[in-house]
Length: 84
Image 1 (cartoon, helix red, strand yellow):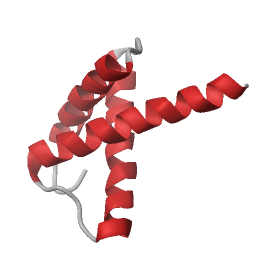
Image 2 (tube, helix red, strand yellow):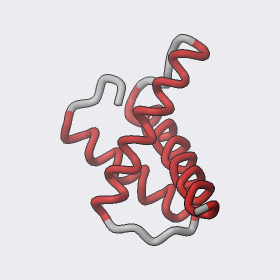
Image 3 (cartoon, rainbow, N blue to C red):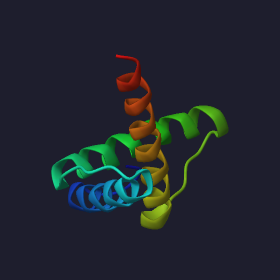
């Protein structure tokens, strides 16, 4: 996550994963919430930088990016799993 330390990245990733879990109505554990939140933030940050040249700053901005990215990851997982 852009400009956050390791501890804050884990905390924000966990919160983002938990929010995405509630939005997407899934049932994952704490560790999976953290992983989904961090991966979602990394992927969406890369997309935002490639498309518009920047990303949202600060803890709240990164939380928003992580939640959206985590929701996209859960959606993609369901899309792939549904075909197999």
